Amino acid sequence: MDTDSGREETDHAMATDYVTQRQAHRLPTALRAPFEARTWREFGYLLLSLPISIVMFTLSITLFSVGVGMAVTFIGIPILAGCLAMGRGFGAMERARARGLLKVEMADPAPLRSRTGGPMSWVGAVLKSGASWRHLLYSLLHFPWATFAFSVAMAFMWWGWGLFTYPLWQWVFPMYAGQSGLQLYGDDTHNVYLNNPFEIGLTSVVGLLFVLASPWVIRALTTVDRLMVTSLLGPSRLDSRVTELESDRGVVVDTAAADLRRIERDLHDGAQARLVALAMDLGLAKEKLTQDPEAAAKMVDEAHGEVKVALQELRDLARGIHPAVLTDRGLDAALSAVASRCTVPVQVEVDLPYRPAAAIEGIAYFTVSELLQNISKHAQATRATVDVWRVDDRVMLVVTDDGQGGADTTAGSGLAGLAERLDSVDGLLVVDSPIGGPTTVTAQLPWRG
Image (cartoon, rainbow, N blue to C red; front, top):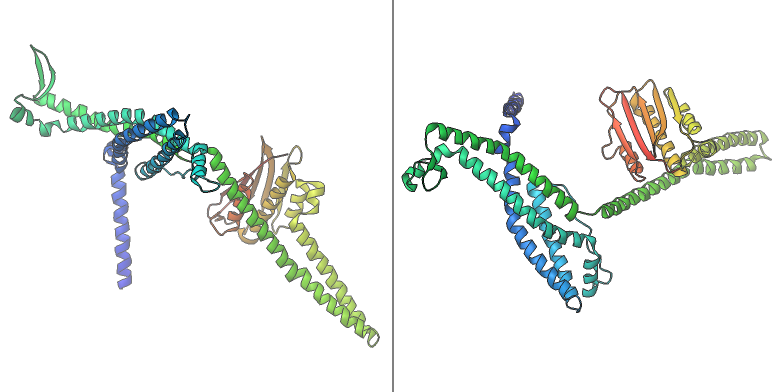
């Protein structure tokens, strides 16, 4: 009974939270935006940007000018390197601020790579680093933008909330300022004050319009900040590409090592063990050849059957490494051979003008082979299709089945490893497999013909 009661309380709490969220979302976005945490985070970012950019700009322009001016002497080079290193320090702070307040997801730039580790080597590494110069450019460009963004954001928020709440503090003017209300206009002969109920209400409405517009103005301003941070303070496209290639190289090496281990295991547990047993049987048959010819003949006959099985295992293993039909006749014939071994009927259609690169052709073959094995083992399907064609400079593979669905590329699954293998050659794997099916797996590979 206690367990049931606890479950009922949990269900009630979840239902209450759901209703509360639904009620909260009934308020239009335009009315929620001025009170959302995002608006105030981004407003705080813009407020902090001005003093930080003033310090960054002042120190950067000063040290850079001194370093360039004294570059004819040896002293200017370390000063210039120090200026760039300081810019990298400011950049680290700006990235942390953007991650915390703007929720920007970005990686750090490539670290400095000093060959010897000495002071002069460090100076050379700083001066040669493109990221260091981008950080300096950010320090110089961010100051005028931060000034503009601070002014606009402060004006909208100050006047918006000030005018919106004017009915609450209008009494300050007659009590302490000696005037009837907020002065709208004034010269030597004429003054206009907002002091009657209509004018006070209209002022509040104008302030409300500013309040409702301020979140969108702030978001537009911080969009520029996001672009500046990600483009100037993050890793360059070259660095990102190098990192991606290093990761892909690791995937390729791991995949190759796993394939070698699989081949070694298959040889050790399959053909090798069978050949060892075959050698022992032939040895026994040789000993009995003179004493019991009939028994020896029977053992030789059994050994002959074992030889056939071992040869078939070796053929299957060779086919798993690289099938001869793929090399001789291409992807169409190879995929048809794979489809014929599937436990469900498979319709194969290959429409390629000519053969792609051998490496791409092999990856396409093994991709389809792996997907058809998954269909045989897990899909509980009654039919499947394989379509291969070329679009521009890409090879498209689509494998579908009418099985139970539920396939995904989460870590640890065979599809995850397949996705990593395709990614290592700039390919892509997309799985659409709702519960209950059908399942559609789309793979893209570069042509590289």
